[in-house]
Length: 283
Image (cartoon, rainbow, N blue to C red):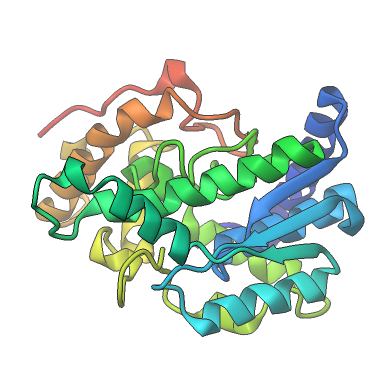
C-alpha cells in the first residue's frame, strides 16, 4: 500500500512526532510492552530512534499462553536495539485474580474474552506502574486495522499516553518494519514472518477473530480514506459477507475510539479524529 518514498516519509514523520510529543510533555523516557509481535517491535524501534535507546524500556509480560518463541523474539529485539528490558511473568498474578474473583463467575467458568481481557489489563497495570515509578510515558502499540475492528482491550492493551502506529494498517506496519530493517536486522525476521497472535489463549491467531489483514485492509481503506459506501464496495466485487462482517465489527468498536490516547497522524483519515467517526452507509 505504501511506495518507497511514502514509507520513508511516514517513518520520518513518526520519529519527529514522538520527539515533539515528549518535548511538549517535558518528558524523555518511554516504556512499552514487548510481546514478540510485529507491532510492539516496530514501535520499540521507532522510539529508540526518536528518543535514544537509553531512554526506552521494554517490559515482557509472558503468560501461560505465551510461546517461548515470542519471548525469545522480544529479547532479541531489545538486544538488537540496545534498550533496557524487564521480564515480568503474569501467570501467577492472573491465577490469583481468577481465584479471588471466583464469585463473579457464579459457577460458570467457560472461556471467553473475560479471561483474555484480564490478561491484557494486568499487563496495562504493570506498564503503568513502571510509568508512574520512573516518569516514563507509555507508548501504545495498536495498529489501525485492530483499532478499526475493536480488536483491543480498553484499560489493557489500548492504554497509553501516545498511540504511535494507530494510523497505519497492519499491512503498512509490515512495510514499515521492512524499512526499519533496510540496513541491518533490528526486528527479528521470525517476528515479521510468524502469524500474528495476541497469545491470550492456546493456539490463538488474529485470524480467529478478524479476516486476514491482506483481505481486511483494502476494505477498511475503501471505507475510511476512500469514503466509499458499502454498496460501492460491493459493486467492486468484494464479498458481501466480508463487508457485512467488517461493518458489524467496526460499528461495535466505535465506543472504544472515544476513550483512547492521541495518535500520530500520517493519513488523510485518522480514526481518532472523533469528528470524522461516522458510520458508512449501511447496505
